[in-house]
Length: 152
Image (cartoon, rainbow, N blue to C red; front, side):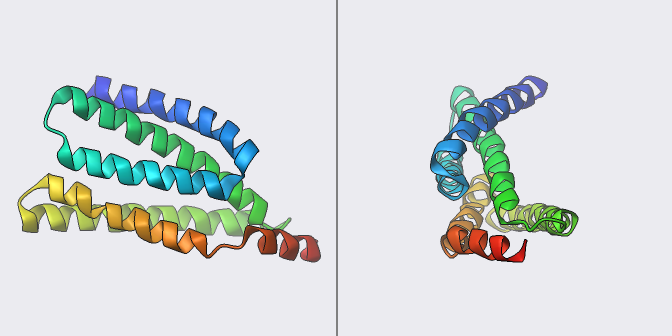
């Protein structure tokens, strides 16, 4: 397990670096959308996984998605945070992250218990990524930038 977690962390570093460069080119929102797609693919592949080798490959994919989504989402927060309100906005961002970790764990545990399978629990997490993508589509980054420019 230690080796597996080390592999995931290395993949997360690679994902943060490579997709961070993509964020510079495409922007944060399109990069986050890509990472949400990677998360969905990871959950589907994890559901279908039957071998240790495939499990490691899915773990690498999860690491890439984890590192890149964290980097891109922080970049988007930086774009949409007014000056002198950074602590407030990032505090709320951190609170939401903690809440989602709790909610995701509860859903995972309940589905695992009710279905009698962690495969279905992993698949149930897909819903969170799809809902996140739907909510992200509603974010008007240009309007947010303009509103911040008007505030400062």
